[in-house]
Image (tube, rainbow, N blue to C red; front, top):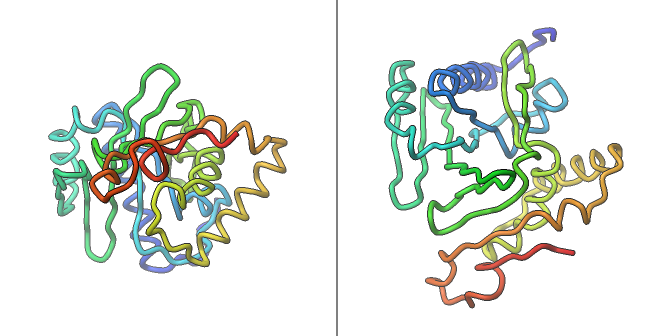
Length: 216
């Protein structure tokens, strides 16, 4: 992949991706990038500036001390937010946030609010081999996850405000599943969530946003 002009900020994020891959390898785990960077990675080039990086890490809680030590050895400021089980790293103006990803056979459980919020989906949706992005290896959440999550995000969080970049990304993944001949129902029937976090906000335990069942 040619190294066309890359802004200083995005170049720093590219270096962070390299570090994420190396740290994950050293800890015998995988970190999957999800969210805004996935479109760029799938297209093989930076398409816009990014303000942060999001990922989830297999078996993160069991490896937490090792992960923190590895990132600190690479010069990152490392923090862990206990109440939502979020690991954050920062170097200069670049920062990333990681949540735990637990796996039970072919069920992946992304704990986006720690024990207070989990999204369930097929583990097979995630990249089973790293992609190459500007000569850097990265794992991503994959097309199915990105489309499915974006379709239910408004059900997961009634306070979510859709941004223009969210609309653009959803349209991108909509086109991707059409290109690949994937039926939307085959995705939406396999993603659901349980977030007891919202019960504390006064929502019903049996309805959205606490419980989001498959959209058949």
